[in-house]
Image (tube, rainbow, N blue to C red; front, side, top):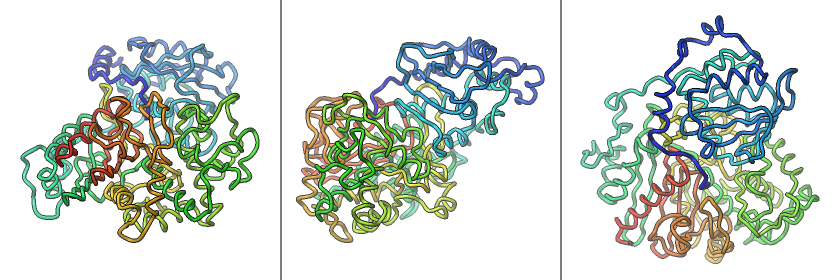
Length: 582
C-alpha cells in the first residue's frame, strides 16, 4: 500500500553518518553529559536553537523529506504548542520549526506534552505504547511512522542523544537514551536454519527438518527460491513461503532466515498477516450474506443504529468492502488508537465525521482500521458472536487453519513472546531495524480487526485453496461457489490510486496487470481472475483460478512500496515460471 516517496539510496545513510562524525562525548551515557550540558524545556526557544545546532551537520533534502506536524494540547509556559519537524529518511536529519508551514504534513500528531517527549526520545517499547492508550490523534500516511521510528531508534549520528541530554522534564522512558542494540552474532554462531543457508547448493540435513523443507522447495521451485534468497539480508531478515499447484500436485512450505534477531524463522512461526487478515473477514461477511442476515448494499447504520447522523448513515457495507467510502485513509479515525481498548475505538468511530462534500464511490479511500472495525461490529450485531469467535468457528475451522489466531490470548502471547516474528525496517541506507509495532502484548491480545491475525502462511495458503475449491475446505464448506464468485469478482473498476491499487472485489484485491506495471499486484503472468491481498509491504497471498495456483508469502522486512512491489513480482513471476505457467 503506498507508492509514496521513501528514499532508498543505499549510500545515503552511511554517507550522512560519516559526514556527521560523533561529537565529543556523544557516545557517553546521558548522565555523564548532563553534568556539562545545560537543560532546556522541550520545545522552548532555547531548545529549538539547540536542536538546530545538534543536527546542523546532517544534510536535509526538503524535496525528499517527510514533514511531521505536532500540536501539543497542554504546552507548559514558554514552550510552543505547534511545530513542524522535517525528517530526512535518507540522512537521519531532523529540523524543528515553531508553528506550521503551508505544506500539508505527512503525519500530523495531536498529543500531550509528555507524549511528544516520548514520541521523539522514547525507546521503541514506550513509543509504540503511545498508540495503545487512546489519547493520541494522528492524521496522515501512517506507513511513514515505521520509517520515522527507525530514524529515532537508530540515531546514527548521535545528534538525538545529544539533544536528549540537554532536554529537561522528559517522561519516564524518554529521559535516558535507548540501549544500543548489540552487534548481531556472526552467521556461523546462529542456529543452522537461521543462517543464510538458503544459498543454492546447500545440502539438507535430515528428513522433516527446516533444512530439508528448504531443500525440497529448491528442488520443486528453483527460480522462486533463488529470488527469495536474494532478498535475505538485503530487504528482509527472513521469510515464509507456501505454494500449492493442484494440477501438478506441487506443494511447498518453507521458512528462511530469522524471524527476530538470533531467532530462526520456521514453518511454525506466527508472523502477523496485516491486511491479508481482511480477506478472512470478508468471507465472514459473505457467509452472513448467504444466510440473508446482511445485504452489502444496505447502510451500516441498518445493522448498527449508533452509526447514524452526520452523513454516516450513507456508508454501506459495499463501500467498506471495496474501500470506496468518502473517508480518506489519512483521516482514518483509528489512526492513533488502533490498539486502544475496543470501547475507546468504538466511540471514535461512532463520532467520526465525513469530509464536507466528499462523495462515496468516486475515489479509492483505503481504510486500514475503521472499516473492518465496523464490519466486526456488524458480525456481532447480526450473529451474536464476536468477530474473533465467529471467524474462528465459521472460517478457520472449516479451512483447517489450526495454527492461526484471530487474536492471541494473554497466555499465548507470554508463551510465544520471545519467538513471535518482528517486522524489520529495511532499505534506505541504514541498518535493518527490528520494531515492536503490532508486537506488544496489548497489540497482540486486543483485536485489531482486519490487521493482527497471526499464523504460519501455510494456513493463509489453505484459506486461498478453499476459495479455489469453490468454497469447500478440508473441514467443511465455507462459502457456496456462487458466493465465492461474487466476492472475488470485479466490483470496483476504473479507479486507481498512488499506492498501486486498482480493481477490487468484496474484500479482495483483483489482479489488474492489464492497466500496466504500476497496478500489477501478484505476477506479470497471473490470469485476469486472480484475487488476493497485500499486507503492509510485507505479505502477499493470492489464488489464480485459471492456473489452480495458491501462493502465500511473508517477508518480515518492510521496505518502500516500489521496492516491495519489485521483490513481490520477482518472486511471483518465478513461481509461474517454475510451474510452467509463464
